[in-house]
Image 1 (cartoon, each protein chain N blue to C red):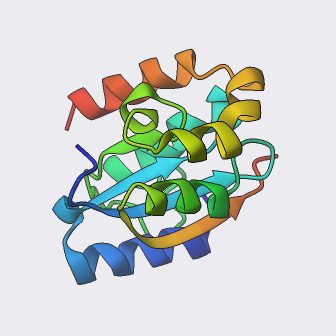
Image 2 (cartoon, helix red, strand yellow):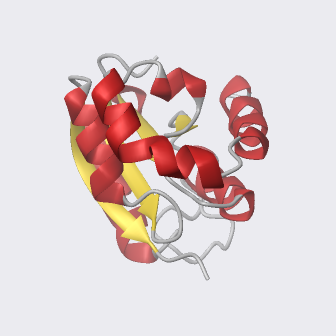
Length: 41
Length: 104
């Protein structure tokens, strides 16, 4: 599923921010190639 | 999804191939999720950004979906996502994203 994929992490300021998603996925051995945090207003 | 991020995703898809990518979202509410998912699968629904008319068909997940959570080490899940799991209702987002993934 996610295994072997390069991950794009798009977080949200009022949800889970991009750096947190990236840290979690990298901790699972996945390769995060881009992370950002959007502000959805 | 803002245009800058759309541009980066388009470049990454050109570089790695969209079939080798997955998007993981962290939205707090379901109303943004559908637009994000549509943008990286069918193209920008506003027809204004770099992904307008570009159907990348990249699978999209939410970080709090069981499919993602189950892949994470216990300590990271508890330390980084425990609070979000309490306040974010992931079920409506799971239903939206599951449907979007099944259409790919």
